[in-house]
Image 1 (cartoon, rainbow, N blue to C red):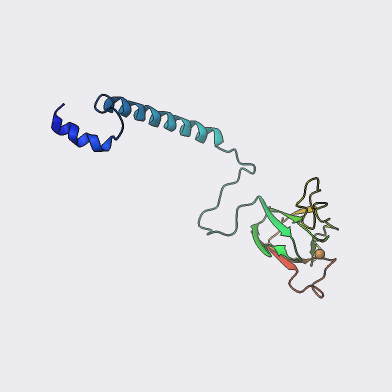
Image 2: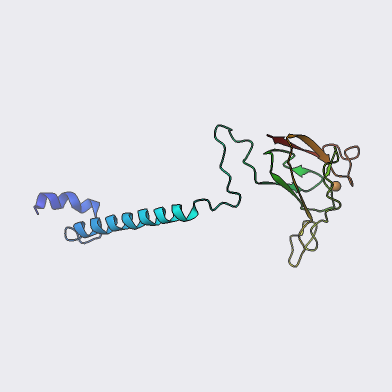
Length: 171
Ligand SMILES: [Cu+2]
C-alpha cells in the first residue's frame, strides 16, 4: 500500500485504524445486507394475507373510498367526526362517544338506531382521568349502496344545527 493511497484514505476514516480494517468492514457490511435481505424476505412471506379482512385495495380509486373493512366516527362536543364518511358496501362503521354528553346515532331513514351511548365516565368531562369507563359505542354494517344521513335523537338538528352526519356507501 503506497503512501499516496493512505493519504487519500485518512480523511475518510477518521479515528479508526486504517488499511487493515478496510476489507473486514466491507465484509461485515455485506453480511449485514444479506441478513437484512433475509429478514425482509421472511417478514414478507410471514405477513402475506395476514390482514384481518383479507381484502385487497382497489386500484385507481384515489384516496376515497377505502376498501371494505371498518370506519370510525367519534361523537364529541355535539358533532360527528368526521361528519362525512365514504365507504364501500360491506364496511362496518363504528361510532364512539367521546363525551362529554350522552348521544345517539340514528339513521334519518330508520336503518339504524344506536340507543343512548353513554359518555366516558370519571376523570372529568372527557374521561381523561384514571379509573374511568370508556364511552359507549355502536356499530352498523352497510350492506347497500346509498347516501345515509343521521342525527342524534337526544340533540336533534332543530336544536343543534350541524349535529348531523352522512355515510356515503359506494357499490
Ligand atoms: Cu347528542
